[in-house]
Image (cartoon, rainbow over all chains, first blue to last red; front, side, top):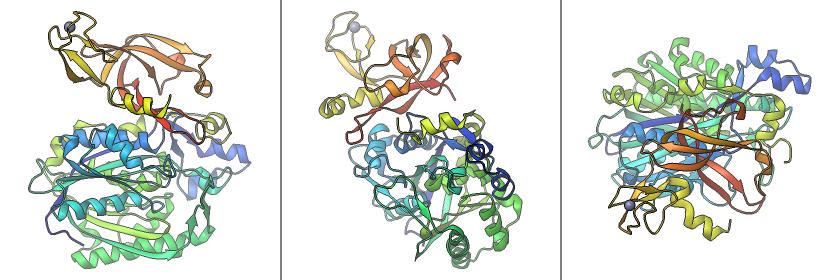
Length: 354
Length: 130
Ligand SMILES: [Zn+2]
């Protein structure tokens, strides 16, 4: 897919909460070994939101950082999309809360999207369509989550909190474009690997079924479709970013497709912050923009259970250099941390009814 | 807080929107009908800056209704870079690490929830600068 008008990333920004819990601390409570999570899934600790944070507050901070880098008035945003599976309200858009808080209201399209971990890149596809057809000047795509795993479930060791906002603009009209979209594809099927029914606090998953027929099939198929459409191959990219529910899956998918380890390192964040769900792959992409050089080509592929993947190819523009220092990098947020024990985690994440 | 009252207060609580005196330049927060310094009613819209430093604080251990589960939390007076003073909650900080003079920046955070069924209230708080 490629829009009629060339679109670019005009600004990017992320947010990761202050608090962390290690897999050892979680394993200790349930009498499990942390070894499997550390050595095989490559997760050391995960980021957790504080008591006064939710997807709205995470999205707002990421959005403000993206606006700082885009150097535009929020009133020029024609759309604000928030992708999440942990919306603060079951009914009432997060998009309006974010749009109001960043002063983009009222002449703006605001909406929430949900597709398990894929909603962030879906927002990016929607913004690309609106900007690339000339309907709006700039669009903001946000992926953010405060995902929860049931106590003692394998997901409890990986479900993290955080998110990223990307501002999409028309390339010709954007001052200092950051990266130009070369093309994208979306690949979806009805694959029930992970779900959450209404009014349930925690999701359910089909155990090993989440791997081969779900994550790998969709990630690999979308990636190959994109390479074919753009006549590109893995060695044409400087950086590649995958959805990262753990460290093992993206490393295996990348290797299978023919990427080398050094191509995925800059965007592989899951060992230190966990799986940010809708924010996972686009926060990896944000971390890559924090270090990428003009001329680099970047590959981005998401995955959301249910199931599907969106894949993108971008080439980095000179404008990235002038904008990088206008907001904190992902690395800065990862370094800024405070580890808490399971009791504080349980209070912050409402694992105990307070 | 009632829903209409929360909604009316959103510009100042969530975006720090206030008024500046056209005559003497003084800024009151929250905004007033007249300048508290010179009494003029010639006020223009003004958004407070997002950075400042802590000038005074207290640690709340015995909280008012609705905030009991948030204790202990820090309530501070922040002097913004334009010299405006605002009283605001300080977040993402351990009460034992709070210090007068610490550089702070604004963040959009959740204040409270009206039970399981009511609205979620958001406002600007301050935290140690990233
Ligand atoms: Zn005055």
